[in-house]
Length: 239
Image (cartoon, rainbow, N blue to C red; front, side, top):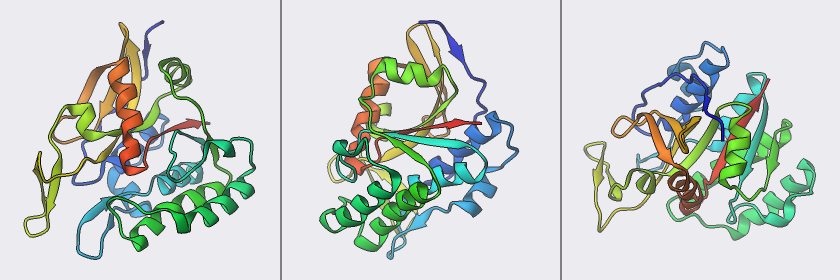
């Protein structure tokens, strides 16, 4: 496979801002002079009723890309929210399915009002013309997408970094390592290149981030394991 090197700028994130930081990286690559603070105003970090930061609805991030003028596609292998038999359905039909599916889903971390935000993001995305694909995501599939431009990707944070599970301390506002009592979480990055059989990622994480090289299978496993939070997806843009 030939090398690919999209010059995606690195944007460092704050607490639970990885989706906004990665979105900012994508937008700046495509010449949109947006800051992470501007993106946060448009697509906020949601907070639970007890003050825990929950991250961002990925459907709302994808909808934001559409509002910035991009043809936007979500590529997902999620089996909790979506169903692989929906691949040939229209957006209107998928919207109907999601509304019916909603009453059967429970999320491992979020209460129902919080999970409603996630569903609302996908409904909004479909309503304004976003496309959802239900592929088998392979290394060849990622490489083909990458040949057209950088990819916004959601991965399992712990698997990507070989790091311990974590908990959130409400009093201190800090995320703490907790290999026994903690949970895994998901994280947004940009896949920005390919070199010597490894993917290059532009990772906004304040602890492990940077412009990094990742083995193909390691990245692929990290994407699939984002299913633990119903987040396993890629987002691609076209102008």
